[in-house]
Length: 230
Image (cartoon, rainbow, N blue to C red; front, top):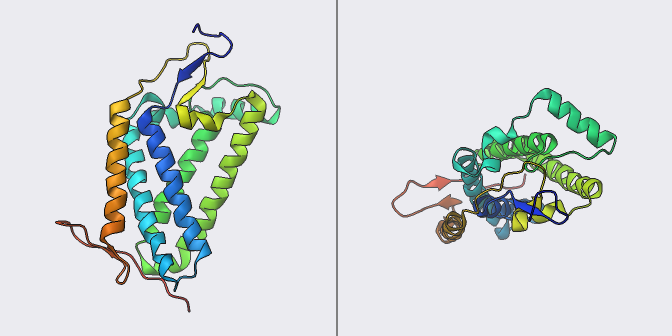
């Protein structure tokens, strides 16, 4: 299809980025759901930790994609000049169209905030003192950021008349002038999916629910704090 032709699309998010995005979103959402639905003394509450370990795996992968991933996944794609960021928010305020094929300045700021909050959330999950204080507050902060993300997706869909969430399913967006397609990197995506499935199975198989310890073969133990009421 020619650039500018109605219905023309361009691949922006390669398969590794999409696998990482959905794996991270689902594992983190499930971990938060378990934490808020079950009481700490409930045996099922400990699966909050298993899911948190899986989310930590995907977060590590996402950090790696920032250095070795596709163009739109690189950390440099998150950096926008202050003038461009101000212009973007002015366009949002006045409901004007803007042209961004990947991360727009608003999404970039949101993503950085989410990643920083999630790094802190996962780190505090390994310390009993922090779990009792900062971990809970950070959980609510992450939920707030997720809500802001969903609201932003709805506003973007209304402004641009396109279902932007589907871009993380098929990886494509409407073609903008001068847009350069991203390589699909299908093989890397399949390998990442298989490795992530294995990582999830290992977390489930070797996490000791009685001692809250991950005992992977040939690796040092990883202990997470047991949380009790009172």
